[in-house]
Length: 259
Image (cartoon, rainbow, N blue to C red):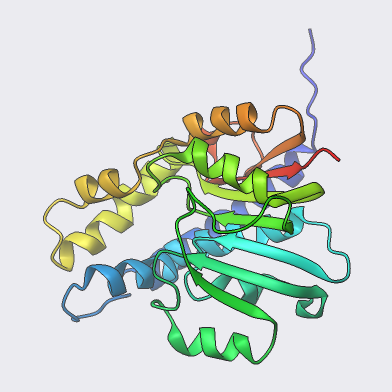
């Protein structure tokens, strides 16, 4: 049997090379994210997530989530784990948003200046709340977003159920997740992330990450399939597009809620 490529291998190789160039450029930037500053867990974690190599990866997740969405006028949206609204930097047309709820256990903390700036641009509400018990009515939102949140929560299935509950029939849910503990994900952590954390005072970076990222990507994907079994669900892997979380950095799950 002759194997047939679903995509042009030359194009795939070229795209992979471009991604790798960005990754290695990110490594150089990432090594000096914190400099000689003392290790502050809250500030340092956010700075690592939005700088250098790690920042590149998270930006790819933001863009992947946005590319999966279909925007119409006057959308009511909720984002869980929204911090200070950093994801909104990746939205192409803020004028299409009539309401944006940025929910977090500690909203505004990561970048207060950004959160206040966003309040002058769009109708945004920063809400302190728990994603496992969203303080909103059923069918209240057109779009629900989650960026790199499910790996951290105690009960991811409950969070997924809550996202479905507050999203109206015909609405959209987009979930971006790192492919942790995939091989490529672990390779980058071993080469770069753990070294930076250790250099800045974390004695056991791997243990710290394991405690914080308690839910594995494979389990989360299966839970998502279960919760949204009545809905239209699509899973896309990036940046290499191979259908394996071991061979990619992140995945985006797009759900179109049944009407």
